[in-house]
Figure 1: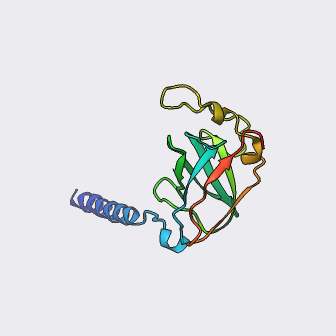
Figure 2: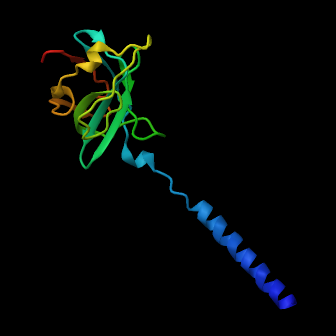
Figure 3: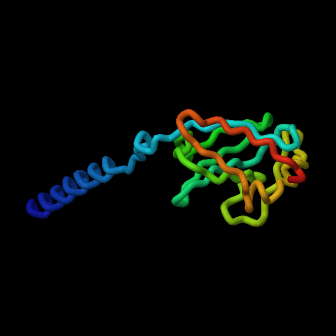
Length: 153
């Protein structure tokens, strides 16, 4: 019986060592190596702030950073849910109603602070989202991008 006890104890020690090693192996993103740039700006339509829209900067290879505009139309891009910023380089900019995902033909309605759907956000022309003609060249010096959309481009 004492032999079984030693084997069980050895199993417990082995499990504890392996578990401790796995906890220490948690992947950590090395954001510093990405040279992220903190990108901010303002989105307006016909000169008026455009609240509650998603601003997405897309660049190869299938990388993007996005942010949502506040009530004043201001945004800040996020690389992921933990880190602000955008990778430098040439980007296609898409301004989409709500948080519409890539490839989505339907855009979610955007409610303003009074609970009503923002009329301007309902009518963002395709040339600013699905068929975007907007471009941005993100650099450490070039990191503020304001967009004044026209309801009839």
